[in-house]
Image (cartoon, rainbow, N blue to C red; front, side, top):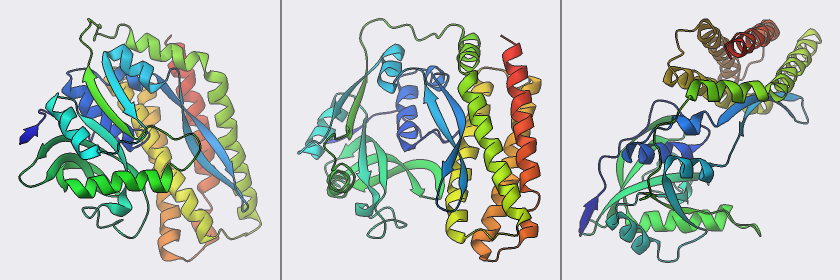
Length: 331
């Protein structure tokens, strides 16, 4: 037997929150629905993460309603399981019913992932949209490696995917409260409106009513900035381990800010003046990331390299205040 659900195309416009969303978005588009209602269900806030060496600057997503509720609003149903013993047969049965499948795997068990196979345990989601019994392969949507967030269509041996699926449960799903690791998606038969009314007003209202949390996050950004300024004044070096952690947070932060810009684009607001402010914020964070990355890869600390970081972060703080002041004034 041979069956492929089409059209399903990789989603590469942004990387949103986690690999789960980038596995899910192609399915939503396959059902000829918009991802925008899910995007405008979330907002982001800055975080100050305390470590033994100091504060890391990060970002987190907050949500109005859960993902399952958001999918129901779109008219998409999902069947979830913690663990499926006969996962190969279950996937094939789902594909036969035109149901794309997303499942959590451990990349340690995936030979197609040369960067992690037998090297690194990594939780990850795979979108499966077809199978071929002759070659014993599944058709999947996957990215090439951890550092490359671009997705493409690939194939994987059925037994390799099964082993990676079981590996996820063994390595990451050991707690008393296990998470669902297998999802089948299908479009509801009942009439659900796919036209989301008042997207601009809905998202602006979401931001407005959560401005206290957003402002608190900006205070966290200011706290990180002040601590960094004091540290540099004392000529205190930053360890490579701390810089690596901050670099990881900066990568996630920039991806989140790029997602915010993408939302404004979908809302047809990219010509608004505050959209240019957001692009400047992304640019400032990208410069900061470059400075931290250069230290990580050179392993040579120089205070002078970091000297303008506090000023840049203060500029970001002021730009964020300006962005939200302008954005909320449009309500």
